[in-house]
Length: 467
Image (cartoon, rainbow, N blue to C red):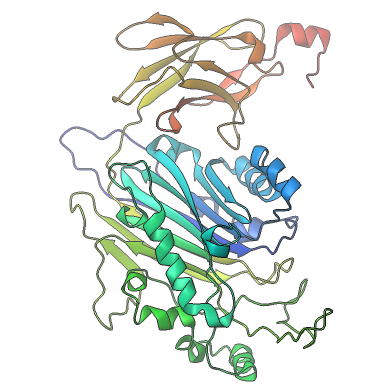
């Protein structure tokens, strides 16, 4: 993917393509698998690696003591995705957790200065809309000036609650609000990606018939009785969301550690009658473009959507892949993946801040950096600049940081010089970068080029190994 470039005056910037990789998975309180490379499609050719990763999980274990600990420290699932994507030069820009619902958002490092105004929200739709075992969590942001919202939902279970699922979804759309003038509600965003365990089932058809269609891969015979498809015929809000063909087998419900659909006995250990769960496409990925209006009976064969809002900066999204990953069997759901190509004309082409290291850096002495404000932004005395190792996983993964206002040691019209204490500089050195974090925008708005931090001479002489 092309690196962000400064727009030349008088020249119209051409459109740019970006790849988005979306995952939804009900993990059924299981522990993470050892390897998720195939789920992330990281075994593809390097040039085809996605620009953005969106990962929505449901039923992450939320045992009270463990859950409270994981609100402070990352949970095992987040750590797995971070440790896998970090070495590939992705960083976690945002995450939100509501009991078992978890939404993670990663981006390639060179896009980070152009992903701004990051906000999160959540809505409970569990018992009396008070309990958070069901509901939705969201992350919204500006991507090169285009407003995008990610929504991960876990809706009401069981065959008979089809209408309740739709009501809860509309309730989530109505109640979530963001502190953003241009896009205060989910539907105000130019693009919405909606994913999750939506729990829609296959209506009417008997169990044996559903199994027969799956065995013969005649999935199209089941589409008309898919509850989400049925509800889209009469719910205007659902009609605004598009989805690719369900050309993969239903992803629920499987026996654990197998590819076999539910084979439970009809009577549970407690003496209650339990029917075998009918297979269903409960796990889904849909999208909505603002101002996209579908006519009756319109069908988009190529799964391409275009936003007609703001013709000067158009946006087009095309779904390239919609499938499941059957090889993961630690849950009774299979993960679902959707990959998209996002084509847009950038509104933001220049980072807000330019950063660079000055002189040689090592833990033997205090170091200096320079930063230059390239565009106006709401600065604060709580803004800071962090020193990171190349391959870091999130904004909190720094060696050290310095407050911007407190540590200014020089000023000119072109650049501001800031001192960094030697105490936090890595003794063994290595490839590092600098990031400017805006406390008001709640995001990184400037990233330096990688530079070498030298090994400390004193440490080398004394053969000091840090903890």
